[in-house]
Length: 303
Image 1 (cartoon, rainbow, N blue to C red):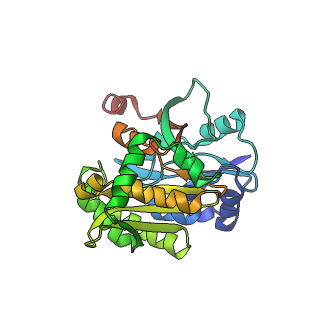
Image 2 (cartoon, helix red, strand yellow; image 1 turned 90 degrees about the vertical axis):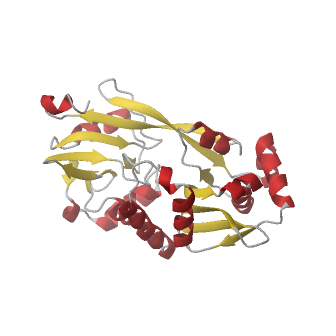
């Protein structure tokens, strides 16, 4: 039986055990992560936390809705057992009717194959690290190999720096073009990264040249068998120096021959997608679910 539970009714210990033991476990669904990106989140829970689905809720103009929080690529249904189509449909149908508009992203294991639901396939890129570095490097494309050679000639190096410095660097070089992200969202993200750091789940790396100029930086989250690229960018001089390729190559070298995957988090922007593919990453898909239960007169405004 699937129950709808409000935030104060959730058993957080059982929730986190379910997420940790799920066959499709992702860090985004951990209770502490959800607290940071969607305060007051609610959930659907099957039986005694055999399977769960977080409900990241909002309210506007007296209407309740579900949305995908910033810095949270995939949510949906998480389960200790195989996620069959009928279970997935039951969860979607159990979303309370009070949520009049729904636009959320399911996870890679939530293959919603039902014509009654409006879904959009979205790309993600994963790189298997369970082989030698030499074998992984062999699958880099020529552009990646050229950029790495260029970077190594310029005597650049990797350093670990505070996550706050990386966020500020990102805002300086890319944040102004990140659609819809407000200062409050960055502050929430900063708090989330601090929590991840305290839990030893954060990798914060930066690339400097020989004059100690910061060229590129990235934040990565570690969870079970997955390292997730959550945020990062390069300056103009960093792009010229191939610094982002150098940053990722260093991480790949460190974790090669581990039973892990590097999750690039995908992108619909062609240039970014090409960068991810340059390391030999494979394309996978997850689904974006949209349900419009708004009154007819509002549907005319928001289809």
